Length: 189
Image (cartoon, rainbow, N blue to C red; front, top):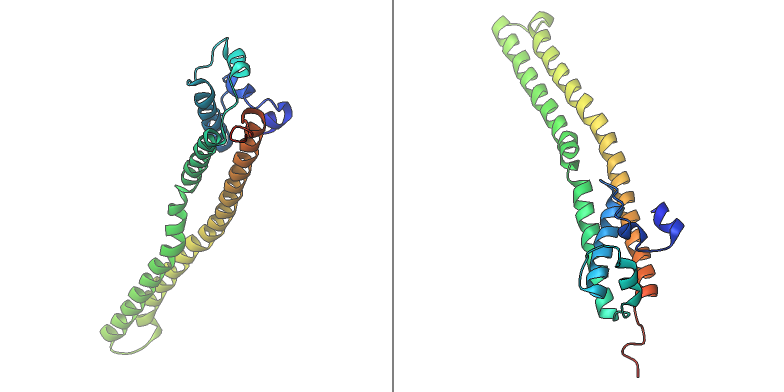
C-alpha cells in the first residue's frame, strides 16, 4: 500500500508486473487492475504498448466502474476467508479443552468413588489416585484452553484489523480509479 500511495500512478505496480505474494492488499489491487484493464481495453495483457493503450482508451461509464469495484469486493471477501480459515483450530481448542478437562474430572471422581468402594472405607489412600487423576486432567484442559483463548482473541483482533485495512484500501483504490478513468458526464445531456 505504501508503494501505491507513494507513486499515485494506480496501474504502475500492475504494469511493472511486481508481485507481493501472500499480501491480501496485493490480491485486491490485482483484482481491481485486471477488471479495470478488461473494462478499458478488453484485455488484461501487459506489454510494451500498455501505457499508450491505457492513455488512449476512452473513459468508462460508472456501470463499468461498478464491475471494477465488485471485483475488488470479491477479492476482499476471498482474503477475509483466507485469513479466517485457520481460526477454527484455536476456536476448537478454546471451546473443547475445558470439556476434555471436565470429562477427566468426572472420570477421576468416579475412579475415586471406585477406590472407596474397593477399600470399603473413605480414607485418603483410597481416594488419592482418583482425585489426582481428576486434577491432572482439569489442569491440562485449562493449560490448553487459557493460552488458546488469548491467542484466539489476539488473532481475531488482528484479522479484523486486516479486513478493515483491506476494505479501506479497496475503497481508496476504487476512488482513485474512478477519478482517473470514469467519465462522470457520460449520461448527462
